[in-house]
Length: 630
Image (cartoon, rainbow, N blue to C red; front, side, top):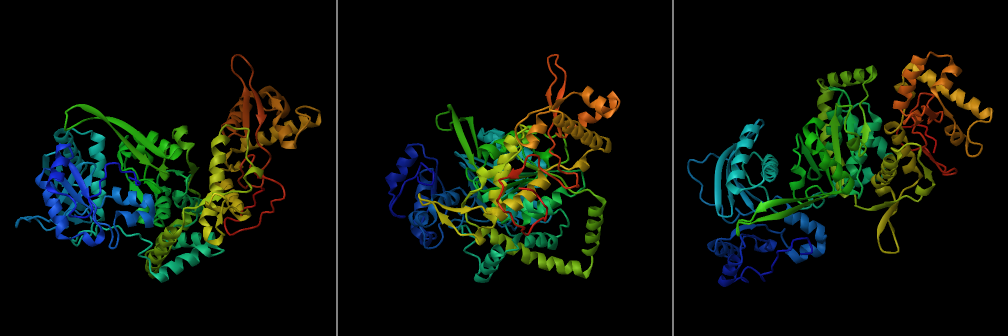
């Protein structure tokens, strides 16, 4: 019950349930029971007898064994309610360990598997698995009804027809069945091709780490050149250039363990390398923390297991495959949970009732797209970045592609396996600690655009994520209430500002040459107005600049440009938010003000209004090497 499962009873060992107890369960409508014996009782005759007794009374029985030396109580005490809940809701099921059942002589060789989702039990028999093949006989049992079919997992048509049959036979909603088949597919993909069943016991990957591997991962996390090492390992894994994007994606992947993870949307042209960036970054993530999907239907996320996305990375390879699910993705990022209530038919009474399904976050979401007109509501939840499409980057990629066909490329593949093992172990060792930013109230963010209301939280969370990643270099503190936490330092803020300038920042290179010229002319006009006494008389210089309003006519007279030229390139400046529109509706004339603070003339990217309190004394750190004023 502490792990969130209400319908639980303790039977005082395998011999603690009598015949009349089993009969009473069935009399009160219990249709399915999951046995949770201690690890040392998993294969005992008493458990097998209890399972047989329950089945005699028409109760479907599944079976999950705790690791050796544990029972439910000791597992809860040592690992906590969250880990126990993860164990109970995991897809692992071992109902066939004690009772494999007879195998027909003409059955094809393959992998045996039995899993239960909700109240439906799926048996996979005769699994044929290969690089391009995944076929099996599927036996589905629910509420006394049975359906058997042959399924080609890699055939969309085969999956669709089976889903239609299961919806008809079991009177279930299509979204529920589709979600169950999707989980079954992924479960079968994880099975070895050797035909051996997976071990049903759940063992913490950290516990499987050798002493040498742990020491290597800890040394990596304690390195003062951690970020430079991360960039070097990206190169070893085949991704060249893209320094800012590499660090952003690595930080977002790491943030899955935090209360407010970062999410990344990669927007670029087809063939630019969006998927390569995303996939390479996510290879550093431990496989048990990654949920990678190619396509996603509208309500599929609502029907996942309660903890299946908690502190995980959800990766979608292409936005076009998840258009129907954007609402669910937005809510998962913002509210950190999904809740849906559906009408279902009670198989016992025949009445229509409701079923509530809750999926918990928080979740870090990765998404790629080629659509520049992505819904603004969706974009605002992400760090939106793009791929370097310059000729220099293309030349570097082509050079690396040629190297992969040489002897040096073969050596790179050997090194890559060691790199991935190190990063995954390092990620597993990171503790889910709270991060406090003691400088937060002394930092500023541009307040002249509504987008700042959502950009600033992303920026502040970016600082906390940098500090979280560097936790092995910090002292863990304890609050008066007993909560352990980390403090963000000046180096964390500096690196976060470097990234913010690159990812959230603007560059005058994005403007056409006439628009850049008009921007400089508008700045000269505003400065002239300030010298002549126009605008606000108090405040800092940039605030006084923002207080000067002007019309197109005033700019036209100041520059001597034609009206059509001013109109065209002033619109470009407004689109890129260098200039803001103050009015122009209900018959009023259009008036503008300068949002640009003068930065970017040197070609570097900048974030309007991003600055910090004077005297913070930021130092250079290993990272991008950008000079950003804070």
